[in-house]
Image 1 (cartoon, helix red, strand yellow):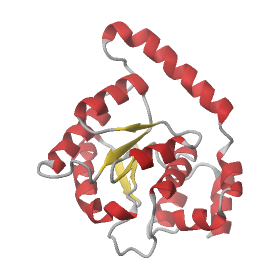
Image 2 (cartoon, helix red, strand yellow; image 1 turned 60 degrees about the vertical axis):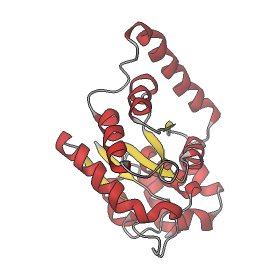
Image 3 (tube, one colour; image 1 turned 45 degrees about the horizontal axis):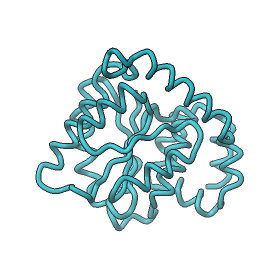
Image 4 (cartoon, helix red, strand yellow; image 1 turned 180 degrees about the vertical axis):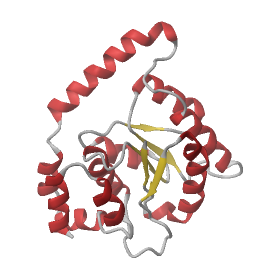
Length: 211
């Protein structure tokens, strides 16, 4: 699995800690982490949580990433921004039980974490527990076991609703503020990681034209 990490500007100073913790959990499972930054608070490209949503949508819809880990101060803004786009099902994750139930019940492809609220002593331990529950085993298996059938049925219904209620990604990219889009895809490592993994040529061509 290709897992993308995206940090916005207010929590950029924690990127190294978050990335190292994520890698320590998922790399032994055989997954690969792509760190899209921000890497420091002084990065030239300043990402906001809205841009996190744009990036998450681009990466997931083009299969440049299979999963996105993102967040902001509370995690709420990043979660809302991500869920505004097609092809993204983002959960707001505070602890390991959130992570486990989101993975097994909702079977999403993106999480938004609070990187300021409650991020004190033991923060890296909480991250370890969250990442372990998110990425261990197969997701979408239901919890508790007596609720498996309706939970899996509801997930399929939600997927179909999202197909109806949201535009396709390329249309969105063409219609949103182009300066906002350009900033979102101007990160230090974006071009290196994205174009090597993108599986949607039309989106790749459009982003190249923006850059």
